[in-house]
Length: 155
Image (cartoon, rainbow, N blue to C red; front, top):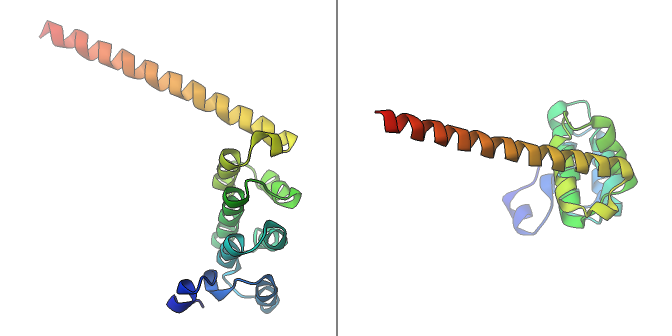
């Protein structure tokens, strides 16, 4: 378990900042490897962290798998790209599952030209959905204001 001193020294979550340490913890069956994957995403190169994050997304405990998907989103934020294996994990999990935030982070921080084709469609879908929702909310606000203004005059 990571101590406060580990945090001060820049050591990753759970005191694991080295891929070899993470691999050894995986072999021992440590329980918080999803959390430690976030530390790897913060401390290691994308190439070093990616295979371990992919393994963490397959952990049996849903909470730890959720942390592993947080690590995917963190990797997208920091590196502005993902590996093909990480894209594949996001595709399998889908936008309604544990990967929802990681997918949103990827769509936000990875340039469109670096996205795989299926992810570009997801970007187009999300952009159009957000635009239509914005129009809907603005029109609903305008109708509500007009309604309130009209009711105020009759009083």
